[in-house]
Amino acid sequence: MRHKRAQELFSAAVDGELSARQQRQWAQHLQECTECRQEFALFERVHRLLGIPEEGALSAEFTEQTIQRLRSAAMETPAGVPSIWARNARLIMSAVALLLLFLWGDTLHVLPELAHQVGADYRQQVQPWTP
Amino acid sequence: MTRSTGERSSPIDPTLIQRCLHGDETAWRWLVEEYRERLFRVALGFLGNGVEAEEVAQETFVQVFRHLGQFRGESSFYTWICRICVNLCLRRREQLSQVQEHESNSEVAVEPVDTRTPEDELVQREQVTQLRTALRALPKEYRAVLVLREMNRLSYEEVAEVLGLPMGTVKSRVHRGRLLLKDRLKGYFQGVRNAP
Image (cartoon, rainbow over all chains, first blue to last red; front, side, top):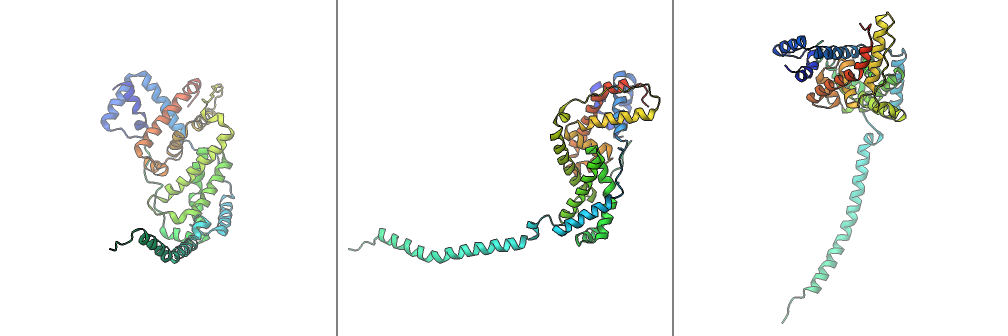
């Protein structure tokens, strides 16, 4: 096994994901290669130290403060609903639909008049031939 | 060193979600107590500050409250709320780094500690501090996977689910992140003679 390949397997080694064959070859390389052995020792140390729990604890009031914030949020919107828009989505959609209907109705009202005018223009342009 | 998979992903009782959606405060209290510690740990890993981490953890619950109706059970409940928490942490980090912009791109200045101290614990604590500083200076794509995988012990599958990335990408980012930290701290570690 070459240096590069051995170092590519560092993560698989600390995660315990090497196959038996890989493990054998990799361990043999490390035994023979001081550089890779030292590099792996540092790599393993980084992995181990990162896993040490970070110092810091939740305050005793965390749950109560959170529940208080949830109560305030509930005053604004019911649970599971993202915003006032979503909450009133049906109402808003209905209003939009009504507006569209109104505009469309108005157009319909104008349509016969428009059709009549277009027809008149057409008849004027294309006069039937009369001998 | 192998970490078990799925230990955090036990499915949540759907009736509990329903109770929360109906505004049952007892159910909410249970939810907060069940997940508060883990969310706080995730936030602490990203932000490195207990007060900020608590604020983000609380905000996560508020966001969960607002969007719970959108939870479809396609992922585990924990990874779903964890994703919300991670997004809030990244946003908060960006706000903070705008204030201290130089921090994110610069190499970490690591000074060898005074190795005359005989207490291994003190040395280790110092090493952890240096490591966390280096971790927070990594580009965010590496920081995110390392915080979830190394500090919060999520499986690769869970990290992939939380971040919405393919598992291969997560694995390669974890590996490269570990290599980056190793290289950045090499000089420091070699200066510590009494390390355990």
